[in-house]
Image (cartoon, rainbow, N blue to C red; front, side, top):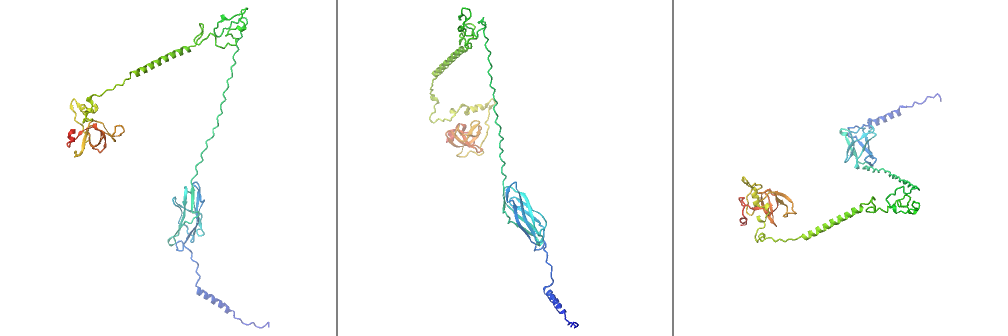
Length: 415
């Protein structure tokens, strides 16, 4: 059977079937196209911001804060705008740490801030035309940054000053007193006594030398050598040539002078009291004010204020000097209006009808016109042509003025 021929098998049928299947699938699915790439100007362009934060979240004005945000672009476009917004402070540009925009880069800024609590946000833009995009990221963490003011510098403590030690004062040493010379045994009277003594009254022994119990007071060997000599008194010595003290005579003279001056003062005071006499003088009947008499007439005005004296002073050798008109009203006197002229210069215009407690508000000159508004207790409330209102004394003003500006008698004005 080894030499028998093998049967003829057709192997092309399965291969053709597989090729037909592949061709049908290609016809139904169409040709395979590559995936389209994103572009910065296409509408599918997108950018993403994430992980917006600040570190540290709080500090002082000297602290340096780092603001950062994660930027990702699906087309790998670089940002055209990247900034940090701090409301109340301003906007600041962000810097990138690399250029791999599709995988994502961190945009950051390092800055110091003033004291306060500040919100912040990130704004980034990229792309162009239809692909232009701008995103503001506010979901930051922490939501705000708090900055405290710098603490005040510590108060410097004063450097303690060492307490000075007192300088020891030297104790004066006692100077030894020289020993008194001893008198010679042969002549005890050879050394003079410190003060004159009555040596004649000193008894002597039979040998001519004084006994120890009868030595004179000034004798060097005597225990009472430093005492006051017996013959020295307060006023003078008891013997000629002895010194005396002048204190007692000076004190006596001072006491005598003081007593004499005191006596003279007392006598003068008594005489002054005795000569004090109170004299009561009655005013003459001619000076009494009769009923109906005007107490503000010339007779009762001080002489230097009288209009007659003013007129006499205005007289000169060349004749009478006309009045110098000062302030005058432009409008004529109307019915019910009383106007007068000031009699003398530098008339006081006050704010109240009182000579003592009022305040000066101006001065009026002689012949100034005023308008009478009110009277009160010897004072008159007037208005000047300038509109100033104030009080003047009644004796300051002259008689009323008529419609023609001439002075009228008091009787005419009353009628």
